[in-house]
Length: 188
Length: 179
Image (tube, rainbow over all chains, first blue to last red; front, side, top):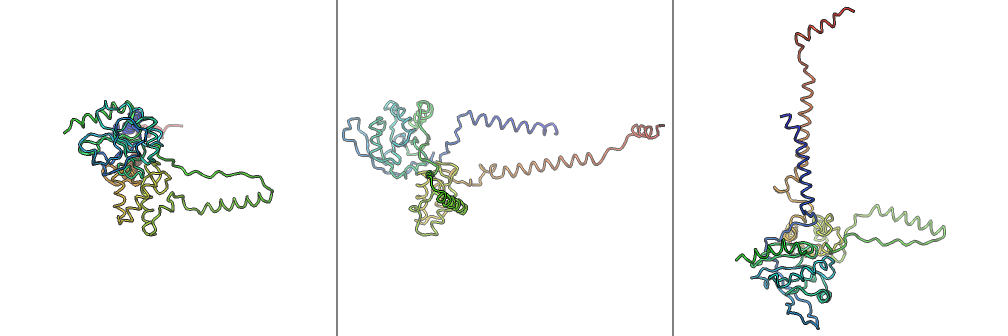
C-alpha cells in the first residue's frame, strides 16, 4: 500500500506530461472553438446577391440565394469578406477547387459592402457558383460564425455536417473537406 | 481570425512647451484628472446608440452581456469588447429582450448558435464536474492525506515500544558502570 502511494505523484506527473505533449503536438488549436451548429439544420436565410459587374463574361453565377436553394445537394458554404486577409490566403485554394471537386461551392460575403465583394472577386477570380451578401452579419451569427473565413459542409437534407474555421489549405481540403463531401454524397 | 481589433485605442497625448505657470496649471489639471480616474467605473464598450430606452430592460441586457463571452476576444465579455461581433451580439441581445424574451431565453438564443463556450460561467453538468468540483476534491484529498500522515507519525512517535530484556540488561549495565 505504502509503495503504491509513493508512485502516485510520479504517475500523475507523467500522465500530465503526456497529456500536454499530445495537446501541443497533436494539432490541437485552443483558439478553434467547438461548434454548436454541427448536426443541426442550416439556419433559414434568404440573402440578396451583389450587383453583377457590367463587364462580366465568365460562367453564370447565381446572385443571391436562400437556405432552401441548397436542399438536395451536398454544398460547401464559404463565408468570406474582401476586408479579411486570411480570405485572400485561402482564395487560391477555393479557385483550385473548381468544378473538378464535384461539389457546389457557394459564397456568403460576411459584413462586406456589395461593391467591395464584387471588386474582390473581379480581382482574384470567382470560385463560387452562387454568391450572397450578409451585410448585417445576422446570417453569420445564425451559423455561429465568429471570424471569417469559415467553411461549412451542408448535406443533402440541409444539415450542417462539418465546420472548418480559418482559411482552407490544399492539405485541409484533401484530408478533411473532400473525404467528408464524398462520404455525404454517397449517403441517400 | 481577422474580424476586428480588440483593444480600444487611446488618443495620443500631444506635448507642448509652456511657461512655468502654464506648466503648473497643466500639472494640477493632470493630477486632478488622474485623481478622478480613480472614481471611474470600469470601461464598457456599450455605445449609447445600442442602448434600450427602457432602463429596466437595458439593465437586464447589461447583466446578461457581462455573462457572455466575446468570440473574437475570448477573455472579454460582449459587454466589454470593442469587436464588431460583440457589437452585433449586444444589439441582437437587446432585440431579443425588447420582444419579450426572458433572460434565460435570450441567453439560450445565443448559446444555440455558439455553444456553451459563450457562457463565461460554464454550466454545471457531468462534463464540467471536474472543472467545478476538481479543485475542492483535490483540496479535500490532500487534507485527508496530510491528516493521515500526521496521525500516523504522531502515533509512531507517541507510543515507543517497550524495551526488550536484552535492552534492559544493557541499560542496567550502562547505568551501573563503574566510573
